[in-house]
Image 1 (cartoon, rainbow, N blue to C red):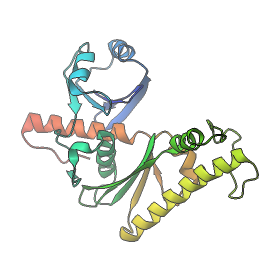
Image 2 (image 1 turned 135 degrees about the horizontal axis):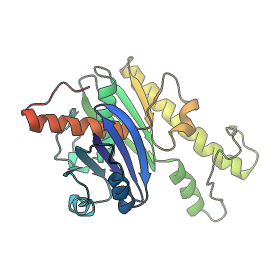
Image 3 (image 1 turned 180 degrees about the vertical axis):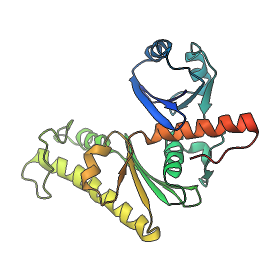
Length: 257
């Protein structure tokens, strides 16, 4: 089986794959906890590992994962990928953005894809029908917007759980907490729908994919059809891993799905 690891600033997210099938995901706060969990998975023959990280260098990753029983591959801007990269500065492109794009192109071959990743930042990236990553935009994410208003003003409170009361805020709010919620949630919803509409104008057959931790918060506010793919980055990492393994073994990549 393949294991892919998305190593963030404070935690590690994992995906076990049998071929293209995602068997199980995991979430770990420490590397030692991850290594221990892998050691306890004797029923899963581990064949290949690919790690993507925006917070660790390749040397650090290799050093911290020396306890794994198989070689560890690190995904960086030199790693071959099953899509074309049209970014002007590929060395500055976050591996999570490229992995999500590869995952989207594999799920919807021959279609333009808009990948909306709602994490710490909002990213909206386009893959064209030929499988070329065209680029996209980066904007503040949901929590970052609340924090910016709280930290850059004297009296505005921090909103930690904007949907704690389970209702969507009105455009015309009647108290400060709801005004903050409305500004961020409705503003982000309008922003996303505007992006979707603009891209659909250029690509009528556009597939819109939603991922990231805040995806479920905005899902119901977006213009259909929307494909919610929470594990899109892991799916893309597995596709990249399989592409590279096949290239190494045969000297040429297979027609990956």
